[in-house]
Structure formats: C-alpha cells, structure tokens
Length: 357
Ligand SMILES: *Cc1c(COP(=O)(O)O)cnc(C)c1O
Ligand code: SF4
Image (cartoon, rainbow, N blue to C red; front, top):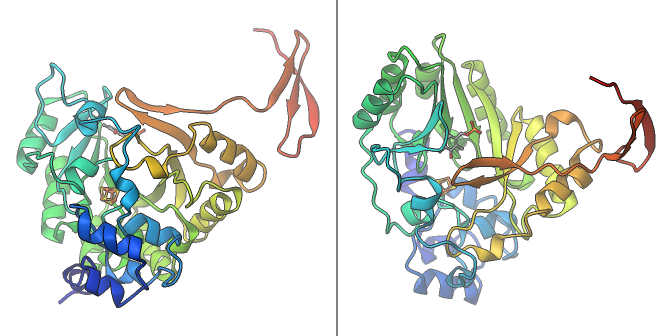
C-alpha cells in the first residue's frame, strides 16, 4: 500500500489514538467527547505536535476545543452567503462564483486534516451542508461558460482523490479551449507530504500549455519539515508552482515573531507566500479571530523591509463579493505639489519628487 493511503487509513481521529501521541488535557477530552464534529489528522501531522503544550500551534488547529460552542460573530449559513450560492445564476453545487473570469470548483468534501478554523466548516467539518459534487456536471458548466479562463479546484482537499481521478479532471479541463490555467488548493504538502508520489508527479508533469498552479495552507513555521521541502521540490520539478494561503489565527501566528518566521521558512522550502486571510466569520471559530487591522499591522511590523519582498503575502478579507486587500498606507507621511515624504520600515524619512500628470 502507498504510504499516503496508509496515513489516511491510520488517521488520528479517536481519543484513544490521539492519547498515544500527546497528553490530552481534560478540556480537550471533553471537547472530543461532547462536540458532534468531524476532526482528525494524519499520524505524520500529529507527530509534529508538542505532546505537553495544549497551546502548540499545530495542536490548536487540529484538536477540537470547547470554545467552538461559542458563536457571537459567526454568520449562520455562512458558506451559502460567502460563496454566493443564493443568486439568480443557476450553477451546479460544485461551482462557487464571485468573479467574471474564474470560479472555485469543489470536487470533494474529504480532507487529510480537519482544520478547526476551516471556513467551509459547515460542509467539511460539521457536515450539515450537503452539496452535490458531480465532477462531470461541473466540467460541463465550465465548458459552456466561455468567459471562465481560470479554474480553482478545491474541496475539501482535491489531492485526496486518486491519481486517476486527478488525471481525469486535468485532462477534461485541458480539452476546454477557453481555459488558460488550472489551480489546486490542497493542504497535502503540509499535512500529508507523502501524497506527492511518483504516480502523482507523472500526472502533473507532462508539458502542456495550460499550466497547473498549487496553493497550499501553512499557518506556522512548525508545520514545515524536510518532508515538506521534498514534496514542494517534486511539485516544482513537474512545472507546478507552489504558493501559500495562510489564515491569521489568534494565538497561533498573530505575533510578529511567528508571523515573520512562518513567511521566511516558507521560502526556505520554495513556497511563495500568496495570501494571508482574515479568519472568516464562519460559525464556531470566534476564538481564532483577531481585530481585522491585525494582519495589515503584522505585514508592516514583521515583513515589509524587515525581510525580503519575496516573503510578502497580500493580506485580504475573503468576502461574498471577492477577496478585498487591506493595505492601509503606512508609508506616505506627507504629500505636497512638489514632493512626497516617505517613511521606511525603521521609521526613517526620505523625500521623493511628485511628478504632475
Ligand atoms: C478565492 C476564490 C477565487 C480565486 O481568487 P484569486 O484571488 O484569483 O486567487 C475564485 N473564486 C472564488 C469563489 C474564490 O473564493
Ligand atoms: S484542509 Fe482546507 S478544506 Fe480541509 S478542513 Fe482544512 S481548511 Fe478546510
């Protein structure tokens, strides 16, 4: 059996199996036994947890918490609202649309890791939202919509599908004349790097003019290992670029040190930071949410100028009308007809000519 399949079959999703890796606290145990929620991860990802610290950043993303019962800010039926499913345009369940030229294509509701902060919680974790995920129906809709040039394949985690199924989706999409790129959103390079097998590499690697791009999700430097580095390198060898979409999470990466370390470490394994998302107002995750300004402040205080621009993600809130970048202008201190006064990351000022149109 392939190692990645073995990892999934041995998923750590019972109290007993979790106890064989970490010292479960009474609060964690109560959450696991009383909350009716899907949870669990791979033996590999669990092995990265601190066995004694309930505030371990990996543990907090994986082990259910009693705080999930609190819900002051979560929007009910969040995913229906957020993914614009309640509109006049009739679309298959698998197609979420916010933009003219691109869509998100949901092909599975299964994941290798059930993130406690997942904005698709209602579909993936709580499982009270049922969607029909018919791949052929989705592909047919894309074929009929010539304005779509970019398909983002998502889930769940699409890399949970077999090599054959992934190959089929890619092949069918590449037969559509108006498509210019195919993207996958998958957490496997982080939570199940074993998934990037030679078989999958064969599926991804043949040259084709329609490129494949991947975005993964890594929220803390601790999630990155030599295995991550190898998996990303193998993807790059296939001509597949790998970016990161982090979620800003209170107590996990919302301090300057963790935020900078995360983005620097991503580059050491060749992952290019793409987005940092504000933690969305899905139900039951109030405890992960910071003030909205926090992400922009962290980019100012931890990244810009403090380290290479390659490490810099864009901070966005992902709303029902698309992703909205929050980039307050911390740098223009003054502007006259003649010149700007600009401030750098150290607080030093400089002048720059203002050129009239
Ligand atoms: C995030 C998202 C996209 C892709 O957005 P990019 O900014 O191009 O990465 C497309 N459609 C939906 C519905 C999305 O949520
Ligand atoms: S891997 Fe993605 S879809 Fe799956 S639970 Fe985590 S955030 Fe949600």
